[in-house]
Length: 234
Image (cartoon, rainbow, N blue to C red; front, side, top):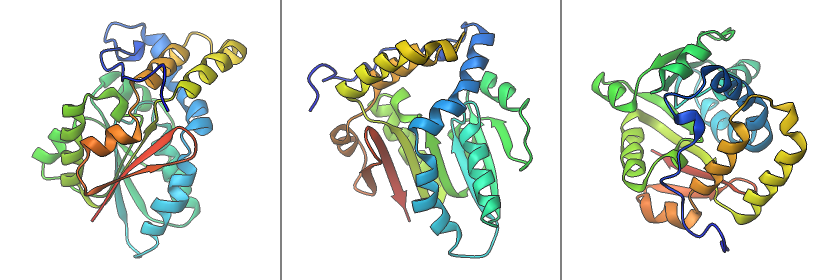
């Protein structure tokens, strides 16, 4: 039950989304995503319960698209897990923010992931398709009409499955994150991660809101506390 964060703060902008924000602080934030996502995003569980079973259905080179790859940590982790499981996975990761692509292009990329400055519309115009489409922390950035649009585009791009993983808006999560920041903020200096983390929670969707927006082709599932999966499968 939501008492304080009853409504989405849809007009609230995150600092990292400001095109004029300090680039060094932005790049520090991208680097810190790797730590924070390991703690809160639970992509390892998503991989084990959804992605790996799909990849094991057929011995072939599977294709995956990561929409809004940000700092690239999720993309790189998925590639590493697939390699350890002897699964052939070819990954394309896109972001509409050129700063994110510039950041990831300076990372070690042993799995030859294709990082690309592009939108889903660009890929559709190029008649691209992928077995699996994923995204992390994208949908809370979108208003309801933008979300409907990206869901339709993801359906067009995916041959097998789409998995969107994001924050569920919660009073408890908001105040817990704010309290946590008091203790460990010094370990993440010169970063937007704490301010933007709180803003992300305020902008998050509830399960009920997502069910009202997504068509009945999509499943809305809870992944642990305060995490939502939006899943489409062919």
